[in-house]
Length: 359
Image (cartoon, rainbow, N blue to C red; front, side):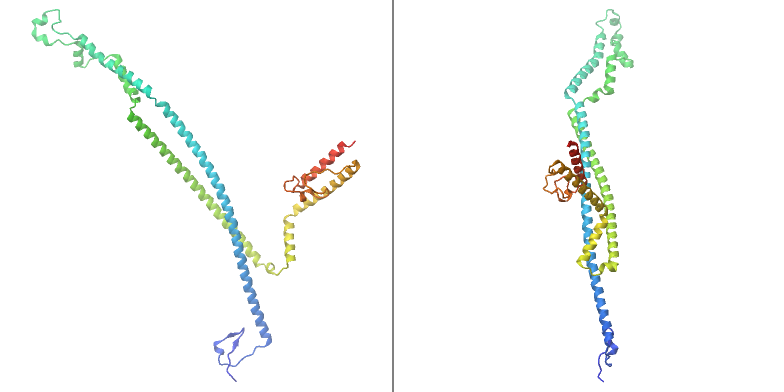
């Protein structure tokens, strides 16, 4: 016997089978092996189809989530713009009130007039003691008695009473002068501002306004950042939940063997109709109810018009037959379009008007 390579089921070469006798498979073993290969190929194809469908579904879900997030972002931006407009209006009102108050306090003519009047009063009160001292001053020659001439020692004692009081510290200033000093110390002179002080005050007020603006901006920016963070966290959580829910649903559907059975186009169409009828069962009931009601009202109208020997009037400008259902055949602009209740009410009102007008 010749040495031939041995094949192990399902057709693999074994290293130990080299240089051994040939083993021939029976037809039963061959058929079983072919069936196993076909089943493996089918399983591989099904898995590939599942993966492709999963990828398509995931792409659709991502697009939907992205569209929802874009809409939410647009709404958030509109709300922020409104809030910023309100804040700007508030700041403008505050600035206008501050400027008006500063303009009322800064009046050049009133300050200069007050300064001149106060300076004149100060000069007059300061000159009063000197004039009083000069009037009371006496010399040796002006004395009537001659005692001062005889006593030369007393020649130097020609001093007024005011000077002696000043030296002793008992001199009393007039009341006007005291009141002026009190007023000056209390703040009359503090209100008088020079050009340099005005410039400094303007610069300080501007600096304060700038600081207030910066602080308000920081406050609004921080509030906006916090809001954006909260919204982003919510959106991420919603997106994850949305994707996980649909992925689990898709996996459950893919595991069902009925979903991957071959179906004809007619069967697919029937399944779609069943789904639509389940979802719109209530709508179908309402449509059938309005359809029966409309047909009964149309029959009554025809009988009434035949009695009166007149044609049925048109309820809308659309060119439709009287026996047709208006909400199905009217144009988009018509008031009966997709509104069967309105059409039935119009038929009832027409019947009532005909009954009233008949003798």
